[in-house]
Length: 544
Image 1 (cartoon, rainbow, N blue to C red):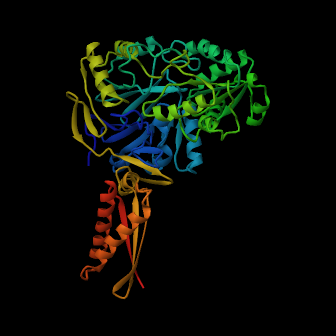
Image 2 (cartoon, rainbow, N blue to C red):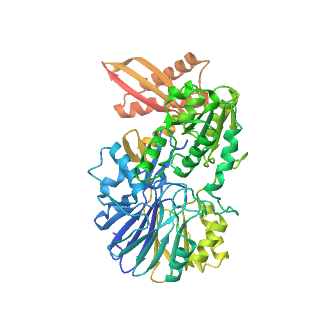
């Protein structure tokens, strides 16, 4: 059992070596705190899976020493696992008003309102959790109320950035100033644990306030109906799009549950009070095409989102030749194929698409190199620990930090238990930091039997063999298959597998399990000879 002694420990259970699924632990004087508990999303490596979460076995074994979970902001990769994992940890959640509103909605959907306690704190709050002094500092990002965490311990001070950028005109919210960050640096920052997403970008991420003109031009030039898709969580972008709709004389319609949720929570805590009134889908379709603008979810190619359904003609909002779809977002790595599929569907309908490559209609929420350099200069940390990035991003931030004069940098990955202090920072050991999958309503290990079987089925297909015995002799063999690449000669394929099964069943008497295995191997051998595949073969022995 690893219990923090007179030391400061850091452990990432998610988000280091990947972009997403953030879950970070700090340990000190026998206690732990967690910063963020997010998800990532399924890929082709996880057939049938939408949500992937960090395996919290390490901290679940020590949950009596866990004091709370601090949420830096409300993006899914920072709060998405809370409805599935937080109740088992049994500790309060600390979040600002906007983030708390998003979390409350998630917990309510799972019926967990009474099981998980949310403690709402100010965006710039100060509070104490055991040996940890916590000070939140608002920073700009692509969602409302993102707060970095300044963590004071007897063994040093950590500045944990969360996701951030610099923005002179964020449209909504007021980030901490350069003077406030410099003041923190004057007090002393020992460890900067920070976002690496855009560490290769030599340019600053850009300002939300600068997007109005580009979006106004894109919408203003459109002749027919306009659909704008963006990240639902970006309330500042929604405010800008509301202005654009008003200026261009278009009535707004909103398509997507997550957009409705963000608008509702933002209004409930005092934002977007001047957002234009919206109409429902039926009214939007009755309006002249050049007098309506729809804000829709689905810019990342999500198959069930509003935009995908519009592209497939399965949504109440119908698109026609000459309409325009504006992608006010970037392509998240891994989503290129899904986004391309929707763009091709739109092109086939003679619908114009506008992306960030054609117009200034999107800025990132993560810091490029000029912003990283500025933060290093203000805070003057002794050590940088890159997080929130793939390995290449984290190594690049470490290299860049050293180049800019930070004395030291340490590269860690999920599962590396790091002692930050006392003494030189170093990795002490590797601990379990696996993944969990949400499969329907069931949480399972990502490397468990279920997903491995599903991968095999997806790759090789499945064969079922039923051998019927009357007494000690078999009387019939029935075979069916799915997903095995034999189409034109199905009967011949089945006949050859049946012959192999009969031959195995006629072999000298064996105990049942040995006979079952002999039949399985014989049938699979035929399938492999025919196809080069190794299907999953299930054998049923039926005794009459």
